[in-house]
Image 1: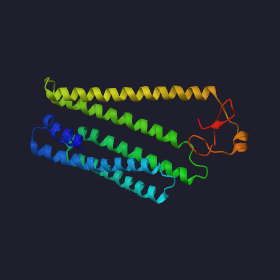
Image 2: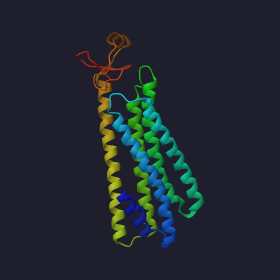
Image 3: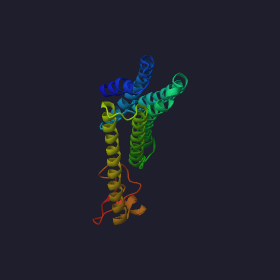
Image 4: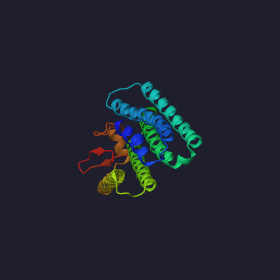
Length: 236
């Protein structure tokens, strides 16, 4: 919240339109979006907490999924209002809106995949894969939007080699470093997964039927599995 206030209210005021009344209205309007995002992040933390509990009634997931639907609707209404109230700043506000909508969709996907896992008789085996790629895609796109926003602020402010330029440069450097780390981590994971796919054979339907067991790592039912040299079966 402190970072939000410092950057969105004070720092943007030093870069954008010098008319303070316009900046105050814009800051309050961005604050509404920040309020929605906080609820989205709280929902994500709530999911991480519920995932550690042995049994959680589906009603808990339904309630938070419904809240996320309202947040998603609020995000869309906020953007429509931006087009009507601040048409001159719509490009900047679009780059504010996209990270929040991506975060909301990402968290909704986690809840929906979990509900799908509960509804299906043998569970949703691709839940982890869907969650991983949704999170990766959302993180990369959010970082890209943040980078574009910083570059837009640098363009609007111009290069004067002052404190504002220095802070913007550090923020751009931080975003590029995070993007680079995301790519490296995904590349290493892809190499590891490719090695496992090539190194170990798939378990046959007969072997899966014979054992009729849960994966010893993730404790989920196995519709498909990899077979180790010792004969044990695990999810990929």
